[in-house]
Length: 159
Image 1 (cartoon, rainbow, N blue to C red):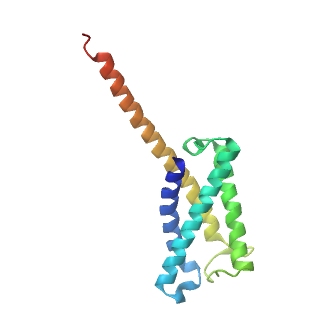
Image 2 (tube, rainbow, N blue to C red; image 1 turned 90 degrees about the vertical axis):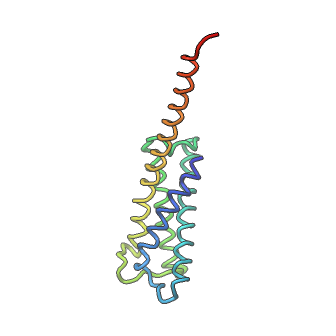
Image 3 (tube, helix red, strand yellow; image 1 turned 90 degrees about the horizontal axis):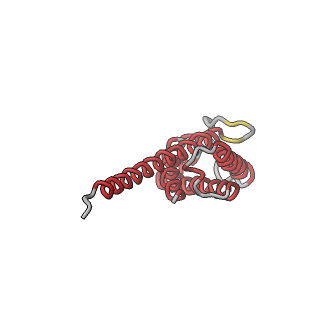
């Protein structure tokens, strides 16, 4: 099930990114528990964006197995849909809702933090590649098992 792979790989990589970029936000004075909670909360949000983008592409291409292949147009739609939402969300949450603020060290363009934008440009293609590699390995394993079964039945003695 590709969604499980997406959740696992996306969760791990986004959690690492969220904690790594932590210094680019202003909430460190609220204590380690708050910072930990918000980074984990953001990781869940990142995974939800990944899943939403995945389902958009699955609907557009009428298959959930697109992530295991090398369909470039599907990958582009996946990245663009997630990136578009990420840019909107960063703008909305920093400019309109004031849900979080960037530290002075966060590079910004038009008020949008570049780290979250880079996060969406870097992580989703890596997740897709990991899914492709994992699917290839599973398929190769299934082929080997199938080949062994075929070889056994072909080479088994006849009564």
